[in-house]
Length: 273
Image (cartoon, rainbow, N blue to C red):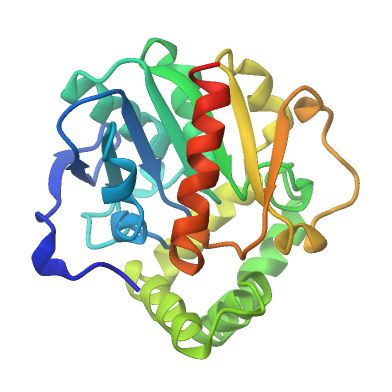
């Protein structure tokens, strides 16, 4: 699923503002910055198939959030979407990065939203990758439903993870890749930590936070996953363009060449109109 480890430099690490460590890897040596933000139970390695290609004409920063992908976990107060956004903003400040385009996959969508709110001078534009527009995930889930989802997932963590993957990958994605994605996500963080973070994701409210974003943005969303979304749109995205792609929830793994071209098209129209 990922590029061979021997071909990549190990992740560098930085202490996060609310505890734990954020990991990062840089691809490319010149050009504008593109920052790749993974989703729930992901890590920086999820981008290995596309980061070198994107770095042909820009600098690319891929991160692993505190507590994921082998990074030192934060205390409970740091296990939130806002805390992860603050960690990314801190990393941008540490590296002196300004005017970056942030790509947030899945849970990374809320995280890049928080970065754009708290560090607007460091963010030029946002691209949401299969994220944000489904109110069933990003529109503040009621507490009782949040508890139900937590308990259901915790009862059979590995089984629920694989079932979730089977629903959101494209039908053409083969068994080996499905299992590799599942195994990687299970290994990315302890179940209890991961589910606590997922609770905060479900409590996060796009309708409250998205209107605070001032930079240009576009959503690049899967037509396959869209079949699962709540049909009622969120008004906060009424002025945000949604571009579709034909693959599953993990296009950087399932269809890397396709999503690179889609991302380049979005960058050309969003950042360099």
